[in-house]
Length: 253
Image (cartoon, rainbow, N blue to C red; front, side, top):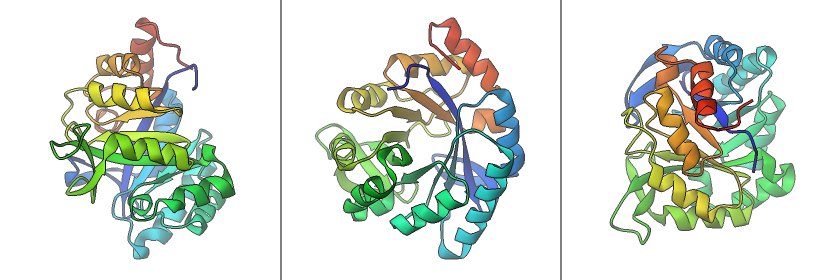
């Protein structure tokens, strides 16, 4: 586990542009990914996460180009996810400048993919991305979803996260679909439960509405917090978030 808590702006990308919505719906344009990446790096972001939210085959080339342009100008770790289905996809993204790769739906369909990626590139490259909803259909009360939260699987979110770590996932990116875009704060219960079961870092995602929302997620066990709209809308800077975290006792870079 890293000692310093990380603040990670997230850029959801579609057709080469950054987009943002609420609960993964009603996407609107939020800017150029390279310009925003440079802005957040200048503000002190520890890492950047890019999620290709419409990762079709036709747009994959756009994603490679975007990753390369960002990597040439921004010198902090880049995580890229969306549409990754094989270790060859991982190799190509790493070759274009990504540092870590997020995997979601493809791992649900074929869990062995996680072991294949971890064995070939190392667990430090592999981030399991989970889109999680509250549900009374699972033992934990949380279910894994796909298609931006629109399709529920039969997977208990906590059981799947634990299994994924056993298969080689080096980090868990836990996105609360219920909180996403609401600016009502991170899902602290979900964050705490993931922290309890995980031997790898947990990244809390979904719900950040102010700089004050980050410290509670850190106290709940998050090693990093990811946010999008509050940064894209210029409501708060990465630096302001880090100052708020430090004021609450967190160690920040």
